[in-house]
Image (cartoon, rainbow, N blue to C red; front, side, top):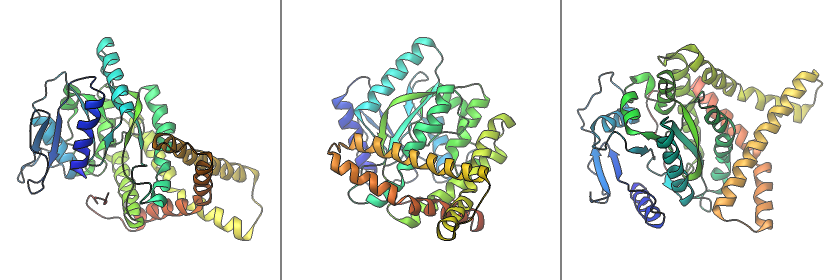
Amino acid sequence: VLTSTIRRCQAEMAKTPLFPYIIEVVTDTQNIELPKPNFDIRHIIVPKDYQSPNKSLYKARALHYAAMNSRLPADAWIVHLDEETQPTPSSIKGICAMIAEEEANGTCRIGQGAILYHRTWKKYPFLTLADNIRTGVDFAQFHLQHRLGMAFFGFHGSYIVVRNNVEKAVGFDFGPNGSITEDAFWALVAMERGYRSRWVDGYLEEQSTQSILDFLRQRRRWIQGLAKVSLYAPVQLKWRFVLGFNTLIWNLGPFATLYTLVHFFFGFQSNWWIRFLANFSFSSFMIIYLVGLKANLDEYGTNNWLKRAGWHIAQVALFPFFSLMESLGILAAVFRPVDGFHVVRK
């Protein structure tokens, strides 16, 4: 997977050579076969005995080591990619435009754009449809916060576009509590220190999980990690409040699913304001899924109207199953929390 991402980076930069680049590959082990270092590939291997001052773990530990040991100049710009996150021509153009604007006005804001999940659509159509909510959320709350310039909801771990001197100043050494969803923790710390964010036009591509069990474990990690960010991030309450409230509302998802199922099978009268909230919630989530579906279909190149109609029907028809899966992930976080950082198969 990592080799595929490296080759995709090289291929896309060859097709859209808008700026010089270097691929820094950060790993915890040498026992994997990767392309050899050369003029555009540099390896950063985190020593086994490395321990950050605050004893950060997992990805946060590796990122902090890389930030402190990278040979990139202070004015270089870094684009964070997970092992399966691959660039597209639109993202390269959008990142180039962003960097030019930020360097020209001297603000050097942190950028982030939308991520698509269609790359394994044919192999895992059900799980790809389930992840369309993630693209939809990018165009909803993430787009809103970056237009406002303040990352109230945190960042994705991928598609962070940040100047090297900013990354080094913030670091990723947040200790164990900041090591589950280190991206959101990092965002709030950066905002607290006066840095601001912005939207980046263009898409990156990722892959959905390969099993429902991994889907649930992924959601469980997010819930647990965001709860720790909301409680323990060393920032003012104003930065933690929005993320904490959003995480709390997310945790109420199973109650909404239960309400819908009971009302569907048994029917009962409820107060108008309960009906309004239920219908508003249902409509909002449906629109978010459909917005994510449209973006993935457009980028995937599905232009046949009959195929597009079929995918839309499938997205709507499977909505109850996706809601149930999201609810099970929340319940797992609440009633079966686990320590550690589960790495999903992709």
